[in-house]
Image (cartoon, rainbow, N blue to C red):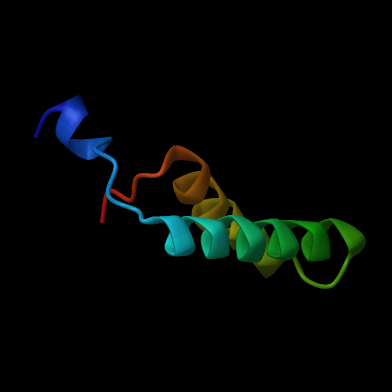
Length: 55
């Protein structure tokens, strides 16, 4: 697998927006103190910002 195939844009507009919103909310909730498990929100936030999901 090449780097280009891993970073190919494969996240659509609505999916991208939802990933960014949900990821940001999860990270904010973790920072406020709800649960450290909410830091997993970094994953959808990053994939939304990059418009690419390697899975």
